[in-house]
Amino acid sequence: MNDCIFCKIARGEIPSSKVYENEKILVFNDIEPQAPVHMLVIPKKHFDNVTECDNETLCAMFDAMRTAVRNTGIDKDGFRCVMNTGENGGQSVNHIHMHVLGGRSLQWPPG
Ligand code: 5GP
Ligand code: ZN
Image (tube, rainbow, N blue to C red; front, side, top):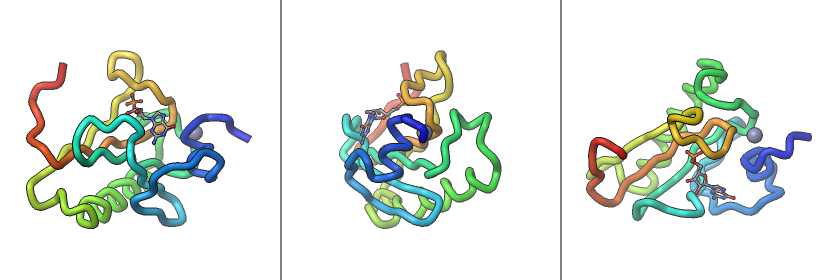
């Protein structure tokens, strides 16, 4: 059994604040929110990052993201999706995840 933290969240072994879930995907609130809405979209199956993940799973992540942004209402004013990847990308959890940030105006470029 994989002891990756997001695999444990996907299996329900670590509690999370769920926003949306289907057979393949879980959307839950980030534990350290950087915006009024800060969700993480993960596949339940483990992939290290976006370069490792198959296209079907990526599509399922984007589909779940669109449902979650509609459910939270952040689609009206806009939002940002980010996949930090690898060391330079600032990835701290090596289970692919899409950050979805909204509810405030976001700056660009990131630091
Ligand atoms: P990364 O830095 O890899 O792009 O993003 C990892 C994210 O996971 C961070 O924003 C961090 O706050 C979040 N995170 C780490 N551990 C947990 C946890 O146990 N529960 C939740 N809900 N979020 C977590
Ligand atoms: Zn994992």
